[in-house]
Structure formats: structure tokens, C-alpha cells
Length: 275
Image (spheres, rainbow, N blue to C red):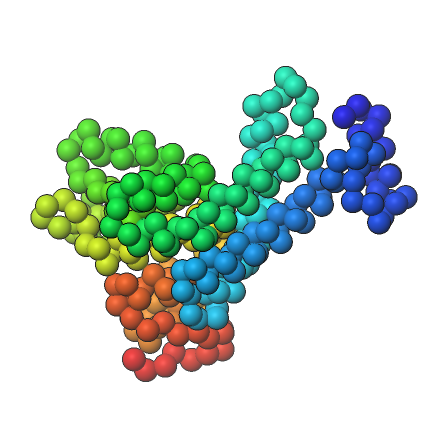
């Protein structure tokens, strides 16, 4: 876009507020972001349905996380695309539109097909699921891949199951999913170097949330709205209490590990019910 057109674009929008395009005929950048938020919210709802989320507060967080994730993913892709194509002076709205297409396509595949692929016993299907998650979580999954290489070279346990990698990172009995890689403490591994399938299904649920709404949408919503909501319900910010209250993003995942097996919905004023 010529400098003069760029400078007059805001004035053009004020003079003609009903127009959704800039003087070059391309969609306005802010309109693309608005569309991204709507697309993200829809992907969150579809993902929650496909993953059989049954508690209303978790469904709500999938939708809110998708709204946030759509905007942040498009902003991120726009920056990446403009940086890569800088010599060609690509228009910002064009870059944003490409980013929206990338996010929307990968998110739809992750939301709809992620559960189907992960719930098979086919490593090829798991690989396709992993690749979708990689697109939706390029930063954290890439870091995890580097860590996987380090762990494998060092002789540590590495397992590929349910569309994600599990890597041994030290003593203990917990696991943390970042993108499509679960940083898993040694106490979670079986003697043969694999992880129990119920744990894999638990962590894979989190990775499918990432596949649907993107890493930025999931983790930002998890540590803000989800953490505050869960603490107010009587659970810790990243867990559930024995009654099934806590961070909503943990509720479906915990049905696979049975701790507790029956999550419950509730707002900040809901008192923890007896087990």
C-alpha cells in the first residue's frame, strides 16, 4: 500500500464507517481481527462438543479461549508473515488474512478430527494429530521437540502416544503439557518406558484444546480466567479438589485419571460440595 493510502486509511474509515475495506479494496486489519475472534469462539465451541465436554464452565472457557486465541494467533501470524516477506512490502491486511486462514484451517482440523485421531490406536493417525497441534502451537511444541532430542540422546524415556510426545524430565509424579509435548516426571512412566494410557488421554485432552484454539488462547486463558475461577471454586489454580471443582480446563481431562472422575460446574460463589 502506498504511504499516502496508509496515512488516509483511518480518515477514510471515519468518513465512511459502514465500509469494511480500506481504499485499496482489501478488508480492514481490525475487521480481520474481529472475524478471527468470532472464528476462534466458534472453534472453541466445536472443539468442546467434539471432545464431549459436559460442564458448562469448561465449555465457556473453550469459547472464551478461542476468542482470545483467534485474535492473538492472527496477530502472531501477521508479524511472522510480514517479517518473512518484508522485501515484498506485503500489506498488513493481506498478511492478517493469511494468518486467519492458517489458524482457522488448523483449528477446524484440530477441533473436529483431533479427538478422532487421538482416540485410535494407530500411530500414523497420532502423527497427523501431532502435526495439527504443531501448527497451532509452533513455539511450545518446537521447544518441546528440541527437549525431546536432548532427552533421547541422554537415554531418557520418550513415548509417543495419543498424538503427543511424553518426555522424562526428572523425579516426581506429575506431567505438564506444553503444546504437543508433555514434560513428564519419571514416576509417571511404566517400567518399559511408556506412560499409562489414562495419563496419556488426560494430557492429550489439553493438547487438543491447543489444537482447537491455539497455544496463546489456551495458556493465557488457563492462567488467568481459568486459574481465578478454579481457585474461587475451592480448587487450586491448576487442579481440581476432591469434590470436582477447580480450573475448568482440567475437568474433562481428569475424567480419564479419575481424580475426581466426576467434575462439577460452579461459579465463584459455589461452595465445594462433599465428595
